[in-house]
Image (cartoon, rainbow, N blue to C red; front, side, top):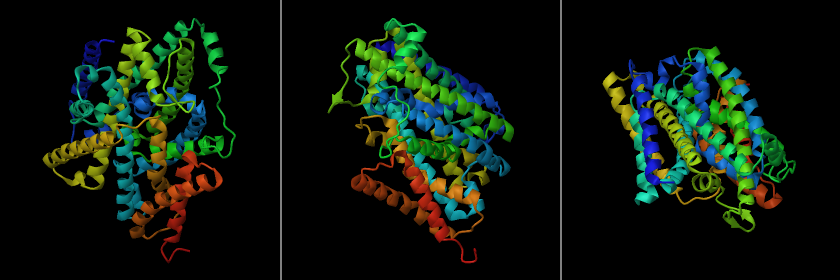
Length: 485
């Protein structure tokens, strides 16, 4: 597809985002960037959150990974649904009752200032890596589809994307993002539907024949009962619950959108609706993955392999969309991946800025001019951090989504342990010891996983987050105050 046409499409899309930013930036207050003035319609928030959660990773990684992981990811999705119910009825009432802007303020209320700062710091690390890895995938595709033709270096491509995001988010932040995410979710889902339709027609299949072909394919395996496997059902299901709680319920990025709803009831409606739509959409992308391999098999398209296995599976969807599916599919794909890249990065940068300014700079007690200065400075700083992480991982291959969840198991584990301990016990702890525990437990989890793998061929998989959280809880019990029974 002509790179100039693709560039024109991206430019038009960005212009649309700027238009939304212009209208949502009217009548803003000092807190609009962080809270959206708590006036967001919950239906809009629910739909828009789909794009932020899925990002370019789901858009590209999930279809590609079915060749190496079948449909085992659905086991994880089933666990997610249970996790979302926990967030809806346990965490959201706590956040609304305490009227939180940064959700990590809860840790100060429950344990103390050191625990509060530690929890926020772990989020900042987790979100920075997660946002960078998500944006890396989209940036690579845009580099291949557009910027290589103009001989623009990859690092310039990343700078361009981050600059565009800064332009439409810097004034109103979450107030703008709630609405831009809705548009971005629409384009992301549209790209998947267009691709499914084109593959169906290319294979000369009816809708019923398409369903039969997908469900009868060798990759259509949903459950893995091998206990030693990292994709075992129980490991995936339990980790799905815990990672949903950690990466949604304990994540400033996702909860900041939810907390822009008018009240607790609407926030709960938002999350339940979001969880249903997300599960359906993820299944749609897995089915698309099987169809893409069906297409490659029928038309003899050579895919990169090593030792009899497909590698660099993240390249499957972009390669077929941009080179084989025709102009309309290419346009849909570019819009989808652009939506995915902007949607995941804009909300992450806003959440990182919110957490740092509220948790470490005490911005709520500054005057209006100082608030604006600090906000812009921090937003620029985290843009630079994400840029550096992207460049560090720029040569990586394989499916990015597995890397993100592996990292999350180590960085979100202590957060999960802190919140579970705080919510379900009344035990007071030695606040000053918490930072040491939260650093040591992920290291211990890593070595335990290594020992299990080498000695017993037992892979914890995504269950590292459970082990990490349990070790954190046990350590917190050990450091309880002496007067506790």
